[in-house]
Image (cartoon, rainbow, N blue to C red; front, top):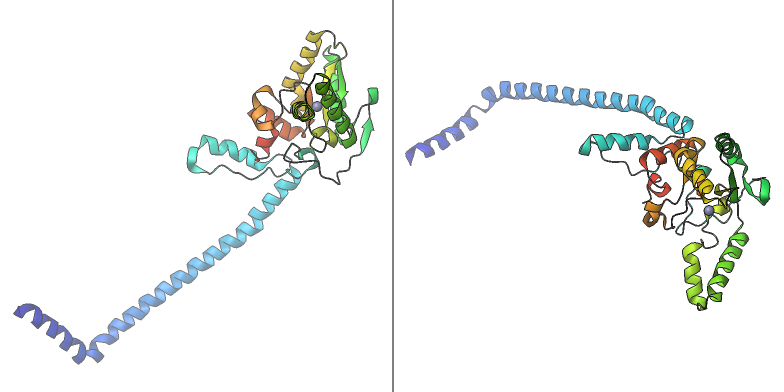
Length: 282
Ligand SMILES: [Zn+2]
């Protein structure tokens, strides 16, 4: 009992009696260490500022350059990196850098063709026409197929909203002839035909491809098989593959090819994904 009290009192006395002589050096020491901390703090802040400025100067400029000069999405490269290094880097969800380019526009039942969509067409044989911008790559692809002994033929290409409406009306009429009610006929038709405003064909960058020897189904299949393996080299993708109907919402269409540009087409081909997945919307 006596010991703790004594020490408490002792402390009290010491602090009140010896205030002036004993505190000076301590305070000086403290001030000195404060100054040191402040200096270290300022140095760290300056370093951070320098790093920030350097990253603004070089890092930011680099990103912009990449976005301007390459159509290839950086995020695609990052995806592979993220996959191989497991959870170290979070997988990017951002759309590819070129997502806003005309050749990557997404049109499906949830994303109709923009109302003000304009297209400059190049006429082909058999009353077909395509967006002039895809014409050179399309021509090169057909030249190569012909050089390989195939005889490809375009059976559908650009369609106006009115064209698409006619196709829908015909399909509905077909089902009604079979005895379906108006409502059922419409529902069934919509399983096969895209509603006007939601068909990629209205963009002018899609084509349905068959063979001039269409009676010989082998020739048609040969054309389709060649396209599966090679179309990406010309910027085209098989848009509605058999195993992706859940994602695209469209049944298997081995004849329907869509232009997405060579960079995206290769990425989509290599990764066996759909345009929806490539754009990060699925
Ligand atoms: Zn089609």
